[in-house]
Structure formats: structure tokens, C-alpha cells
Length: 113
Image (tube, rainbow, N blue to C red; front, side, top):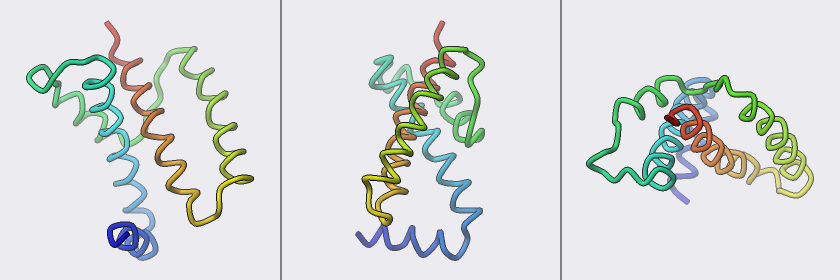
């Protein structure tokens, strides 16, 4: 909980910087999950440059029609449930958790051979 409170204080004090760092971190985490859990590369085969690229992008768009269609199915449903079912103080956490899954999908989709 102390980490969450520190994050909330930082978000209040520096909203733009914290949101940029959060987006980059989530993109990087999504790529790590994609490489390790989806693609099962293992640590020796992990492409650190690819993860760094995803972190630096901080946000991204994958030019695949099915990813775009999936985006339009996923996020409206997530936000609808988030706004109607989740208490206000948990909404950011819910969206960030879904974002990790979404970023994992985007990373996997963008780096398929």
C-alpha cells in the first residue's frame, strides 16, 4: 500500500511525467510478458532492444486491422465496466492491469514473424 500511496502522491504532484512513465512501463511490461509467457523465449533469448523500444514508444499503434478491431471491442467494454462497476479509487488500477494485457497482445502482434 505504501508504494500505491507514493504513486498517487507523485501522480498528483507531476501528472504528466508520471503518466508518461506509467505508459512506458506498461508497454515494457507488456513486451516482457509477450516474450516470456506468450512466445516462451526464455531469458537467454529475450530481446532487450525490443523491450526498450516498446518502453521508449510509451504508447503505440500496430498497423494490423485485427489489432485495431480488437481495440474497439476491448476498451469500450473495459471502460463501461470500469465506470459502472468499479469504485473510483480502483479505476486507474483496473485500466492499468488491462493495459498490461493489451500491451502484451500488441507486442506479440507487432513482432510475429
